[in-house]
Image (cartoon, rainbow, N blue to C red; front, side):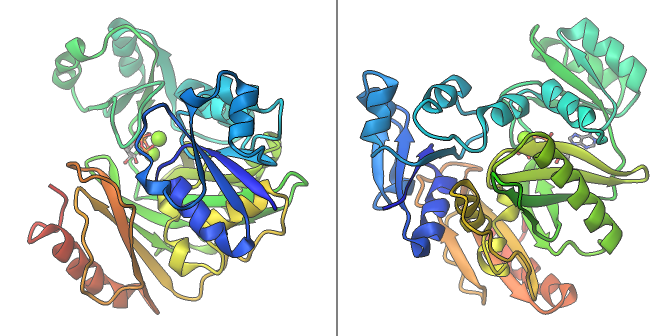
Length: 369
Ligand code: ATP
Ligand code: MG
Ligand code: MG
């Protein structure tokens, strides 16, 4: 019996286990001591990190999985390295280490010969001001670590904006980025096996609300074949350079200067949830296939898919849709509670349905509270 261990127990772990069920794989989930595990209950063995006196005991409590993966970007890299003594850990701990720090991540992307927005590292407010002076307005200031859903970052459009954040940026590591005048944001999800086989999905176009992903559409409307090819080349280049194993997500800006990489996520990604109903193989199934060295599944889609996040709401929309995924989490303002997927033959046919779905979920404003 093949067993996969997942460090983490949230909705991404939940969907991995659900999607791999037809493959006959068993799962173990490593939760932090006292962490809420409702997302993965009934899907496998749940182990709390506090249960093992040492790593070997923890590994055994997890049922000695043949491979271990993680569902969070902010996973403890030291723990992954320790677990690597017992079985392969994919994606490799190195990939988590690179992507957990924005300057390391951008430097690694540049080292692979690929473009990102112009950036400067900064360690305190004075260095932030110097970097903004060089890069101009608008600029984005982001803490190097622990940022997600637009948290721990500031957009400054003017000297007044810059002055206003002086009290909010204690001395720590930041990256200052030139604001990119993008026409759209797109993301590419790909999977790679240890023996170097790579598959990629069609690009998704992403719309954010207050820094959090709200709607993803795939294949991305207005994307030509050239952009898709360029994105695929970027992602394959990175995965090959890092000898990457598993699913890697790449967020990009489509700008006048072409495609620029914004950031990477070494895991299944929210902008790939559309694959659950819209693609022949979901990103979750392909991640599990990739880390187990199984043949990767087809990534094509025949129709247009739209994924809408349920942020701070947990509903069963009555409107016609391809499915509602409710993660079973406790309701909190703004929290990702689930998502809905719509499918249709054309982008135009979907526009009105997206609108109605947003209204059903969020009321007349059609936007999360
Ligand atoms: P995620 O939840 O995707 O991990 P995050 O908190 O890591 O988000 P980013 O993806 O870096 O943050 O930025 C959030 C959003 O802010 C981007 O999707 C984009 O809309 C905007 N943004 C970030 N950096 C820039 C930039 N240099 N130029 C223009 N817009 C930007
Ligand atoms: Mg991020
Ligand atoms: Mg992002």
